[in-house]
Amino acid sequence: MAKVHDAWLARQRARWMRPNAHLCMRPDAHRFVQPDLQRRLRPDWKRCVQPGFEPVILSLLEGKANFNPSQPRVPKGNPDGGQWIDEGADEGSAVSESEGGGAGENAEVGAARRAPGFSRAKGHHPVPRAVFRKRAFPEETKKVFEETSTGPLRAGPHRWSREHDIYNEAVDKLLDKFLGEKGLTSEATRPEHAREFIDVVRRSRDPRIREFNLNILRRELNYIMRFGPRRPEQ
Amino acid sequence: MSADETEDEQGLQWEKLYAALLEFLQQQGTEGENRSADFWVDDDNLGTLQQKIYVRNLKLLDPVVVSGLQRMLLGYPGWEIAIAVSVPGTDELWPDMGLTIRNHEIIDGLQREYFPEPYRHYSYVGSRTGTDLD
Image 1 (cartoon, rainbow over the protein chains, first blue to last red):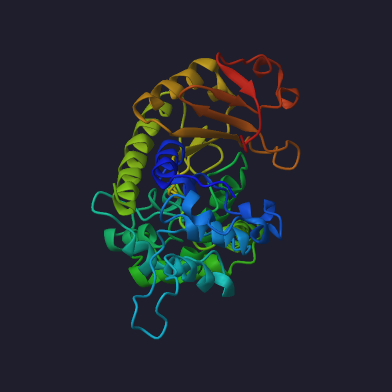
Image 2: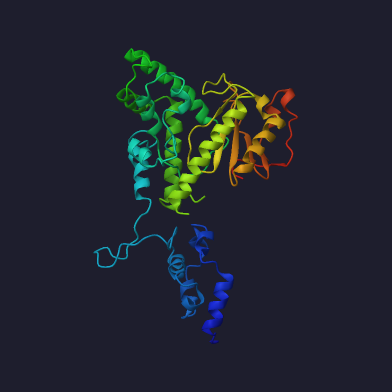
């Protein structure tokens, strides 16, 4: 086997391999690696790899998808020392909570994601701004609607579908009906009514509402099953 | 820049662009969730570099309006505006279609054969045909 000088190799690595090369790799890259490739590698293959990048190569060879070398691990000394810490566990739970009914709206999650400059939580809002802003709800009631959201969605940007437009119209009519049944005026609608209405939206059997919320949930679950519970990279 | 800072920046830019879009489009037509309005700017910030507009009145697809929207992106590198055609009464008849406007290009997915005559001939400088997955 040819002997290659370490200094030359280091120079070639620095020249040709970006330190963040793993970001350029598609999450399912392991699918394109031959199953017995590890057996064919030269024994000193780690010398040819950017320092710190070996685990990525190993993960590919072992068929593990979605590997992120900067993902934190449990420190040594703990019973689970060395295990990966799931960075997106809390985000994933926000979605999984919704499995029982709706698109995973969680007021606490939505509120926690609000940054100082934001006037609104990220993600899908079960009661869109356009629906409640035209009514004279008290500020604290509007705040409940503003802060109840799914949190940022991983499954990517909007497409050209019009389902959200149709959803709004249905939620608007549902809100009229809800207020009518309760005998409430907009001014008299309190935060607990807002929370109750959000629950009504989540449990709605109206196909325009239910299908839209379920589609969000399906897209998120598909994304998580395919890529893992990570935030989308911008 | 940390992930949180990036997220904050995205949120601030989203709010600014959302307000600018509303201001611009309200000069062209009426806005609202009610489908009798001319358009609605989606008020959900999904955390991506995108704004979405639902157009109910095809007059808003006028090349002058679209070009104005594209100019608004000049201060927002990486951002795009998705326009979905959502004309009331066509939900079951017309397929999903729209435009994706970016700083450097417009992706044209309009299926003009469904449009009434005055709107069939809209064309956009710097556009290419494509889908919403482009």
